[in-house]
Length: 466
Image (cartoon, rainbow, N blue to C red; front, top):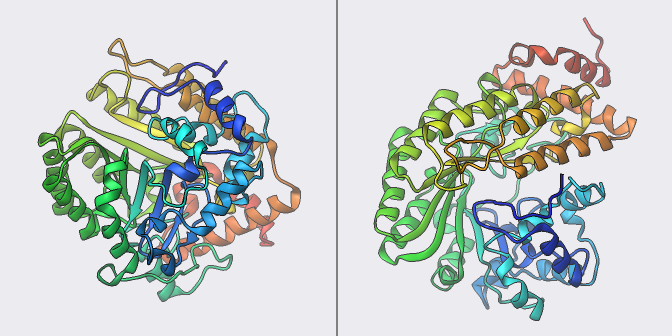
């Protein structure tokens, strides 16, 4: 399959060949996301240029001269200089892993993120002054708090207060997963939130998209403050997005739906999109994302889609070892809902983005035995059989969904060393054995089809099979 034609991620994009050639005319390491996008973890004073690199600190002293230093940190400017000079920033390993596969179907997110509608139009501006420390990004994702009622198995105390509470009660996990703490500020005393609100009047004028994340945003008063500010001072060019686990109390979900429909009805923003997360189906999804109530989740998805025809919901799937065996059921559920709420044009009302998990290593799919590639091939075939351009009333998946599954397959096929496999599998067993003890769960009751893999990991951990 050739991938040089135009594809869609919500908006019309340039061809991948055009994006690749223009980026590589600057450097084979050049990525516009370092300039045009940022995720701000205001609760901890950290940020990263997209969701793939690990976060880095935003020194408070850098904010004193200009609040845009929330994005334009000295560290990030150094990474920009490296990219322009043809050096690969280590923090961008997600994309280098894919590009090193040197496969036509392994499309790097460096091209997808740079080619996005909110990013690619800034190419000439960024290239003209690549080290401009005062640039306003066109895409901002911001979290105000780590308050969250979920404790997903691949999350950590930094992003979930419930994780933090568990660690206080039971102590750390053996392999440090989820144990790390950074200094967290109370929302009302946070210098980074103060700097954000100082920057907001100037920032919002240049924004294509503003996205609130968490923690769980519906549990933060700053989420509703943002929405009130947009109602008071409309930004009709702005795409307003919110990440939510859709598991908050009903009163807050209802308040959120009322506020989002208010933004659309008053034309205070251009569009509203809600990003949510689920990585498997049924009890398997609840196991991965502890705190999830499966039926309540899907009911809230439908309530959002019913509330306004211009609201779109997108599932952010963190594809991991526990996703595989029920993933086709998840894909079928998405098609079922899209049939009920037909797309406007080519965009599904309920979308899905499929990113492969890299951390923690003990949940990454590249540590699975070879027989799981057959499951992956079945998922790929399921997507191919259910492809559609969504123009004739039918609903289906796009080329991009197939691309993302195929690159996961190729990454799995690349494999790990025996030492890496043994360590990651041992960590899997040790983590989920302790996970089950703390959370009153039972892995084999939820995933009986994975008993052979569980025993493989148990052996790697040095425990006898009984």
